[in-house]
Structures are given as C-alpha cells and as structure tokens.
Image (tube, rainbow, N blue to C red):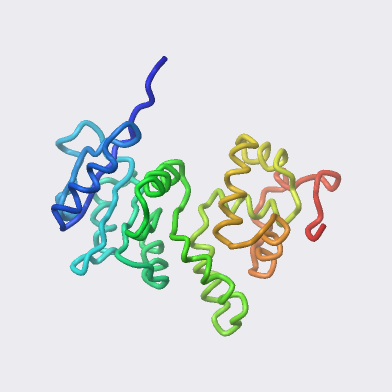
Length: 237
C-alpha cells in the first residue's frame, strides 16, 4: 500500500518563533515544510526539489499583503496563497482576495481546523474565517451598499463554485451538475456545501434565490450544459 505524498508548503513570516511554531504544527504526514523565510522576496524554488503547493503568509505590521502576494506570484506562480491574519478584518480580507490569495485564516484558529483549512485550499477551495457569516445578512438588508457587497461575496466563491451556483439557479440536481461539469456527484456535494456556508444560507433554494437577486447570470452557460426541463427542480419548491 503506497503512502500519500505530503503536500509541499512554504512559510513566510517576519517572526522567527512564529515560523518555527508553524513548522512544528504543519510538518508531518499531511504537509512537508520545504521552505521557511522571513520575506517573500527570499522565497525561491531554485534550490529545492519542487515548488510549494501552498505558501502560508503570516501577516504583520510591516507586511503589505498585496506586495507579498505579487512577489510570491513571481517566484511560485502555481502556488496557492493563504494569509494568516492577526485579526478578522472584512475590508482587508476582501482586498487580500482581490490581490489573488486563496485563503484567509485568523490566528485564533486551533491547530486541527488550520490543517483542515489548508487541505481545502490544496483541493481548490477558497477558505475564509467563520466571522464572515455575521457580515452577509447585513449586506443583504443594506441596499446602499448592495453593489459593492455583491462583488465582494462573489470574490469569495471559486470558479467551480460559481459554475455550480448557476446550475442551482436552474434547479439542476447533483447528477446533472456532475455530468455537465465532468466531476463526481461527491465533488458536487462538496461544492454545494461550500456555497451554502460561504453565502450563509440554509439550502439550495436559498442559494438560488440569493444568486437571482444578485444578478448571477446563466447566459454564459453552454446550451448543452442547461438541464432538460424534466430534470430541473424549480427554485422555491
């Protein structure tokens, strides 16, 4: 029986103790810390066997996330970037996602949830703090900031999650979504669960209603992906 290869990971932190602490937490069967640096400019794949799949960026007062992300992109273009933030800051989080990160985790998180969150990032999900759930309802009832909130929330969905959300709008069941996107039904369930969590809704119908209210269009879906009338499950039922 073959063992699962550990996920190569790099740590960027200006704090030596923080780097060592994160290395001790993460280095093991799931992750292999292949590089630990104080700035992104010193991150390189020239002297290691392979580039990191994930780069964990520790936020600090001296750290400009956008600049660090740009440097990481230059050195390791295919790596997925996760910011470890000092505290939850909605505006800072949105700007970080716009700069190209894939996860935003607050340092108050426990070790096991941290590891699980990084696993999700490696699988292609975007990860954000649970405090975000308290922010969404406020956006929905505040029409004065509706346009900006729509953009901000959409930024938090991965491309695959957005594709799945469009299928929810037309009432497609999981088997139709799986066939259309050429993925398994189990993967569809993972995407749907992530959508419900990120939009802070209880079920597929609420997610579809949110999408319609926020202008999610199905016009860009190829005709062959649209479910036949008999396979659709009408929104609201």
